[in-house]
View 1 (cartoon, rainbow, N blue to C red):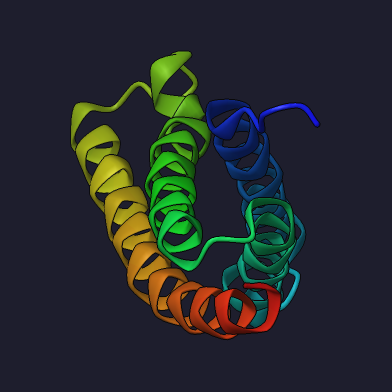
View 2: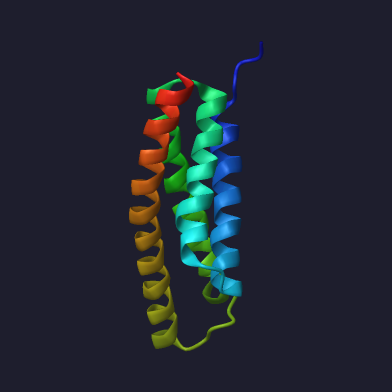
Length: 124
C-alpha cells in the first residue's frame, strides 16, 4: 500500500474549503455551509484516509490555517490587483477581510476539531 502524502492532502483540502468559502461570500450562500459543513466533511474524509487520531487533528489544524491564508489572499484580490485605488478604502477593505478570516478560523476550528475527534474515534 502506498504511503499517504499528507502535504498533498492538506493543500488539496485547503483549496477545496477556500473555494467553498469564497463562493459563499460572492454568491450569498449560507455561512454555515462554508464555515461548518464543508470543513467538517473534509476532516471526516481526511480521518478516513489517515486513520490515526493525532495525525487527523494536526492535519485538520493545518487545513484550517492554510485555508485562512488562501482566503486572505483570495478575498484581498481587489486590492492586490489594483481594482480599489483609494488608500483609506484599501485599508478598511483589508481589515474587514482580516476580521472575516479570523471569524472563519475560530468557527471552523471548533467544529472541525469536534469532527476530527469523532471521526478519529470512529475510524481508528
